[in-house]
Each structure stands twice: as structure tokens, then as C-alpha cells.
Image (cartoon, rainbow, N blue to C red; front, top):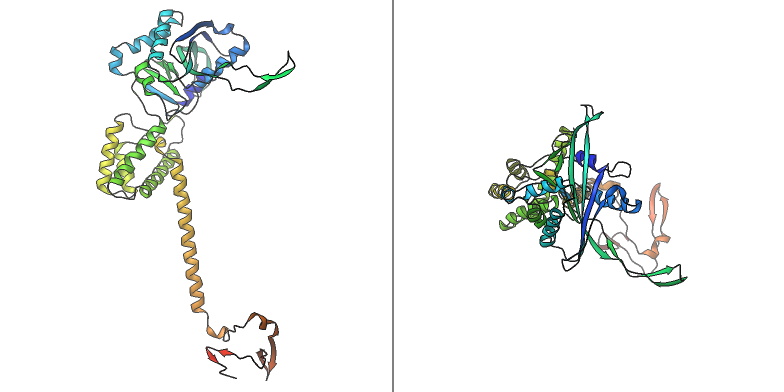
Length: 410
């Protein structure tokens, strides 16, 4: 799944280009009961509603691929239970069959782990995919018809309490609180749009919060294999590496910083080598993980242990290298590098200063005088017997000490 595919669909969600045929949905309260169901011809909506619904649909195709938008495949076992067939029927029904809609609503209501009111929105669309030449010039003919269903699950919450001006009464009064539909927390598009074509074996799944993607939605409602977001992959990789190193009494924090630094360098090198936008992103294989750990100074026995855990945990669904990068760790590594550089510079400067002191010829400073503050103003320079002399007046009660000996030359 590539960003350009998503953008091709998303950019059509405008007043002049939107081609949604139907929109359907239901409103569910905090007790998991359906309050109301509805179905509308989308193009007949009032302008305000039209734009608000378009905004919700567009949100399901927003965020970063691999973190907010996940490319899911149907689980082979769930296929036998009819999950894929159900969503194919949902698409073919064009949201006109109440029994199919009711089944989807009930699946979500029974399985979706959410406390509070929410609304389930469904959009049906048919897109004539325009043919493109090799140089990306559009040809005015249809390559294929992409028919799909988009689902958005949106929280519904009470508006904030407050005061408001009531124009009809010319008074400031407590504002009426009503139930407001928020932007979606989760959603999906079926079938997925891959390489400008439908893929009936895959689903584009949306989650607003990458740290809480709701695996029950992926597995139970959609019947797909659960997939971690990039955020969760990063956290699990960090736990895998640090846990092994800490058990081995190694400096886990420092080594992990070095691993991140090495990974960042390899990713930059990959991007420099393969700058073409159509090149698949860098996937981190098990053998590459081993090389990465060794180059980072991880002892061999822990390298092998982490590599085995990596293979066992991720299986064939290997993460992208970019997903495992932690910006905070890289920033801290860079800060440590700067501090270390400054410490080295200070050490070098101190050594040079000491060298200057040692190497400075004594004849340049044959006399070092230390006097009390009040005597400084009375010191003067005179030429005596043709030589420059310092004259320090002494009162009758005052004495002097030269090189630790009292009045040696007096």
C-alpha cells in the first residue's frame, strides 16, 4: 500500500468531485443500544451536512501508512467463517440491504471495546479509475471501476457547558448542551486500493491513536490478522533489545542508543541509494538485525538471542526499518555526542594551558610580586642605575617577605 494510492482516493472527497452514492449509519448509546438508524442519498444532503460528512470520510484516509493506516489481510481461518464474503456482500449491496447493514452494526456493537456513545457511518462509492501513461499523464478512459465501502466509527459526546448570548431573549444564559459527533477513532475501507486497483483480499484499516489500535476490531469485526502499528513495533523492539541486554547485565541504555544511531545511518544510506519514490521502503530482515547489533557493539551471545526473538515475534510480517527508529533516543544520542565532544575540547584546552605554563621560560617573568590591595596604588616604576625598577614604599612598621624569607634583601 502506497501513499499515492490513498491520495488518489482522498483528493476526490470534495464537493465537485465526490461520487458517494449512499450513506448509512446508526447511533449507539452508552448501553450499547441502537438509538436510531438512517440512510441518505449522499448528493442530496444539505451543503453543511455534505461537507461535515466528507470531512469524516477523509479522516479515515489520513495519517501515516503503517501507523494510522494499516494494510490488513484476511485471516485464513476467518475466511472459512465467512468474514471476507460478508464484506464483499456489503459492497455489492450498495448499502441498500437492511439485513446486511444490521449485521455489521451488531458486529461492531457487540465487539468494539468503547465506553460511551458512538455513531457508525458507512459510505458507498464507485470510482472510474482513469488510465495513466508511463509518464503519469491521464488518458480520458476508464481503466477499471473501483467500488468500495468506507466505514467510520465516531465518538459522540456532550458539548462543553458554558454561557451563551440568547439573541431572541437578549440575555446571557447557560448554553444548551447537545450531543456532538467527533472525528472517527477507527474505520476501514474495503476492498483496499492497491497499485490503482482493488484488492479483495485486503482491507485498509484506520486508527486515530497508534498506541491503541483496538486489535478486536481487526480480528473479530473485520476477520483480519492483527497487525501492530509502527508505534507499537518500535516499543516492542525496544523492549526486546533492552530486556535481553539488562538480563545479561549489559549497559542496555547506551547500547540501544548505538543501535538506533546505526539504524538511522543505514536508513539514510538506503534512501540515498534508492531515491525513487516507487521503491519499496526498507524492511529489516533477521540477518540485517544481526549485522546491526554486532556493528553496534552488542556481544555475540545477545545478538543471537535478540535475532531469534525478532524472528519469532514478527514472523513473516517484518517491520519497516523506519518504524523502529525512536526520534527521542536519536535526539538524546546526539546530545550525548555533543557533550562528549565538549568534554574532549575542554580536556585538550586544559592540557594545552598546562603545557604553556610548563613551557613558559622563567626569564620572561623573573619577578612575581604579591602585595596587599591597599599597597598597589603606591607601587611605582623608576629607572635606577639605568635599569627599570619597581619601587614599593614601606612604612616603618611594615616588613616584606621574598620567596618565603623575611626581608632577605633588606
